[in-house]
Image (cartoon, rainbow, N blue to C red):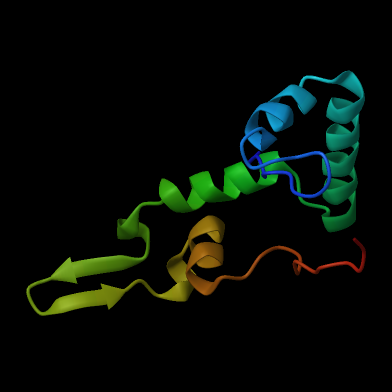
Length: 104
């Protein structure tokens, strides 16, 4: 999680990094951060594991599942012949719509 420099009363630019690092070791702040992350996952219905799985699906996909190369150029594989994952990646469609829910 990226660290943000604190600003406002009690923090100078010179000491903000040290105070921020120190604050991350305090149990009550760690609990508040974990609670905020859990609330965001519940609100968005997206977990870190889901994001990593989707990135892996894209990053490790095989282009031969989508296109065929020949001397005349590249031809896309017929959509009816794609695996479910390949069709989803090529179309950008997901099993359920990703919707943002209102909230903080």
